Image 1: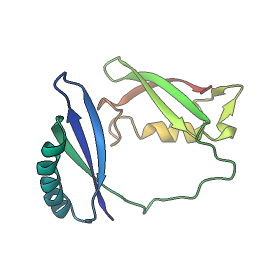
Image 2 (image 1 turned 90 degrees about the horizontal axis):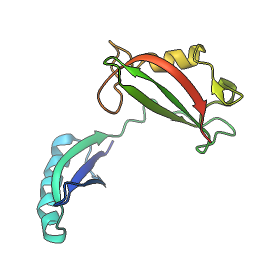
Image 3 (image 1 turned 180 degrees about the horizontal axis):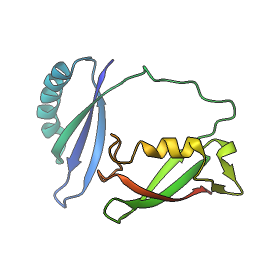
Image 4 (image 1 turned 90 degrees about the vertical axis):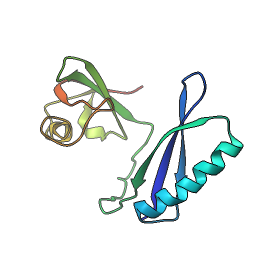
Length: 143
């Protein structure tokens, strides 16, 4: 599988943006070598600096087909508290219709508790700020 480079760029005001570069290589070493050359060429065409590059590898081993009538526009937003008391928000696009009743997701449903258990200590998934879930408070259908 090809390695993708996600380049974080920074301007002189400290603002950042990202640029995704898909490489033709399936090893991290080769992708990094390619991106070293890309970075040298970048400075010749842009005033933005490169803050850092992260690399991802495509993995389709867990790929699945979408359900009939699945819809990216229908989602749910969940919230709760982290281990240190901060509020967190997590969105699930394409939420299954049978998990929602009158705009609210029943948090006691096995599918919901199993999903969010992945973000609890000592599991391996983290929220976007690198923290883990302590409590799940609500889940509502997005409008």
